[in-house]
Length: 304
Image 1 (spheres, rainbow, N blue to C red):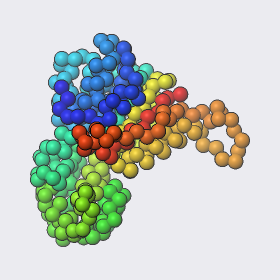
Image 2: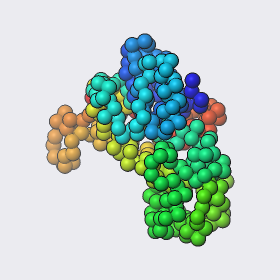
Image 3: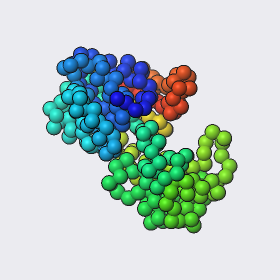
Image 4: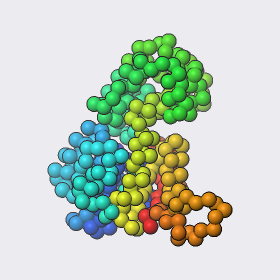
């Protein structure tokens, strides 16, 4: 059973419209909160395909699949959605694709994963702990200019230069608490509801896990995976993700690029997506019950 409260669950289900016999892909399985709600609605003939690159999430999904064969588990990043759909014979037949981007609650709550500065643990931050360098290893070898670039590009951190210089002076830094303290000393003043380490932790995590590159690679693949009339639903938690999703839907709704002053019928542009409604945010009630939902933005589009 799911171990955490999924964000925007009611809104996701309304957007994807799961029904008897439906086939859905949950590209960010986590602990299966959204996938479980989909399984409840697709009936005995439906399927939910869960992708995740976190070994702990995959292990939880496999345990679930032992008792529910309608759940198909793929140990893969969501940039592999086309490959996994083809291997399962569902390319062009999927009724809905869901992304719940960013770090999951179980990852944040596990100190040994090193995602949160609120819990002291090894400075890791890898969604797949067996892939690539940890945050501590990268910070120990990156030059100051590279750290500045990452903090600015992936965290939009206005104090990137000051924080990077402090990190270089303090390294090696082995723990989440150690990094947070370095940042607090470098930039002690910040809005009350915004810890000074927030943007730095976000930036390093996104960079190490190539999260934006994964998203850019995965979104176009959804057009090949979805059936006509199938829907794409993406939950973002910060502007870097949401801007990409918004731009992708906008561009695919416009269709082929033509000069704006050239008179071309809309049908000749071959648009492939239709936006469904406006961006959706969590209600005040949900935010009170689940603070993680505060920054969540859901965008939905339908394949033409």
